[in-house]
Length: 469
Image 1 (cartoon, rainbow, N blue to C red):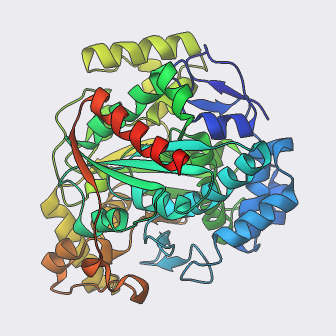
Image 2: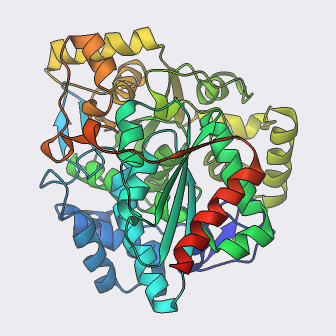
């Protein structure tokens, strides 16, 4: 399996190469040279497997010869051993056709654990074999950071620096990052939005001398391995509900587009995905694009669903590349104009291809609270704000055929957003016992303006201090 950049100017790599590279040198994102595809019989043979086994088999399709299946089995078994539910990603029925795919039973109570717990082990394996050390830099709107830190803390060959927007995460999200006092972990609160944090990470990767000096690697969903590790849970849900004989639809609350891209990938691999519903909050760039081909950037507005407070969805570039017929030059020019003009000029033909499968939906904070309340009253289900956007989107855009089930990605435990849940329902969800003392733990983080030079100095100082030790 080889991987190409969406912008066409980076050398092709194998899976191990894209794992360590993250962002391509030309600023593009890596995608498989061709999509692995399974026949209906091959999909049926995977039905009923335990989640770690299914994940190992599907990841092996993307890892190819770089990772033997037996090695991957060991990694997936270890990655999901500590999850708080034996099914790892259980399906909970909400009504006659709607199911919540609970992705929050990992150590940091968010869907990012599903990929990140595996990614940390992938890094460890490759770095130990190569005798190398890396510095991971990542941007987070709330959940990626804590999942990445939990996966990478105390690992001998990894330094990790996570950037989050100051004051724009929930307190639980922030504390899950800043109370990890491991020497190889550093947290940086950036005075700006998530888009500012994401731009800084991309700029560090774009600074070739700095990238080489620090041996930078990525854990954001710009790293293809992150997206690949999210594909198995969509296959798991589809197979449980009758695929490949029965089509399914997925409703995904989406910020950076990586999670819904993984659902799209399952369709490319041969499962019958009828519809992909993209849920947004007031930061509705994806909804505007799907409704009217309006991919124009506005200011990021804080909301009750902070993990989706994003205007520039990095992973959309991967879909754009596919919509443009895998034309790397056209993709690069479109992204250049998007950065220069703040609006993405997607040709009508490509846009119409997108709207044949994707449906957009945006929900206000008031609507989010109402949906949390409705779910609790009607189904006895306590949802966090992101999941509530997903369920509201599912009700609005479910396929016309009532026999097609709709799977909502339940992306975070309600206890990560206790204030919003309490406002909606009067109930304050408690943290699980392993996190019960989170509010008493010591925090450690630094605050910097959204400027590349001081951020690079911070990363350099953290990395050199650890290498010297």
